Image 1 (cartoon, rainbow, N blue to C red):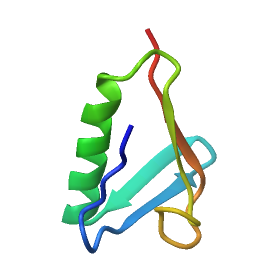
Image 2 (cartoon, one colour):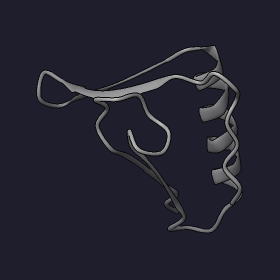
Image 3 (spheres, helix red, strand yellow):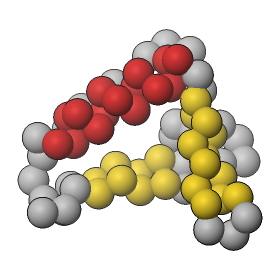
Length: 70
């Protein structure tokens, strides 16, 4: 699966209060995630995308993995 990003995307992921995941993003970040989730819907079960501060998320973000299930 090709992962495409909107220019200027900004996405931050954090765990708040111990169990709440908060995803904060600007317009470009939200559009990028929407495109990637739509593409993921057409992939095989078990397909996944890793997001972290080294490849796509803002500094200080928690790692996030999105996986397609049945």
